[in-house]
Length: 247
Image 1: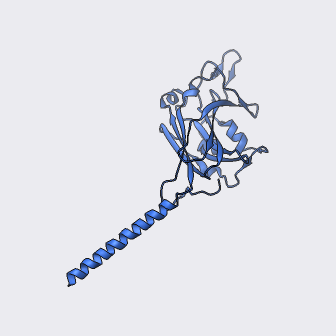
Image 2: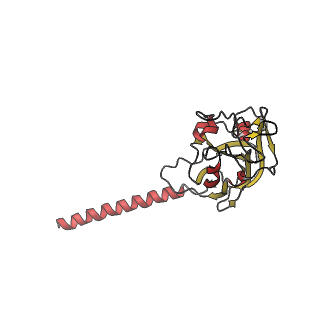
Image 3: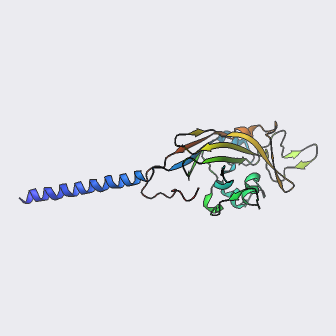
């Protein structure tokens, strides 16, 4: 009799545990319904990076532009560029001119999302060849994804460290200019996008100039082997730090 009671208790405990597990799994799965995330995957060409003067990965920034209201939101920016930390290196006032122009200067054409904190979205410069970042947005919304990238010290014939004709030196070790990539996105689950190289961003005489990509841009075009953007449903999580907060 005692054995039967013990078996019943064990079965009851097992049944209750299974029920709780199923309930939790159902709860976290339901939390992913009607939610979408934009995932950006970047593959870096470490071979080209190692040929630059500093042999360090590029600085880059990723931001979204809301096509309905011109709001801008930084998704990621490498820490050196984001907070101006150039200790021990050439003092680079603007490694990412376009991002700086939009987010660190007074801007009247766009609305910067108020809770955008540079420290919250900045991170160490990725040293591996693969980088991924995700951000949650409302389903069906339309965005422009911008990516700006600059590799310090990637000199070539058109962008030398020292111009022997004019004796003008590349003061900030910029090398080839920063490049801008663009993709128009509709936040519908399953959609895939490949950003295109659309312009170069040049800092000159204290101003940012966005120009067509010049013929003098060589290795800089291949620093990013690939950029892939996909719209996904968030993975089920009991505690989801990426849950929608306003985008």
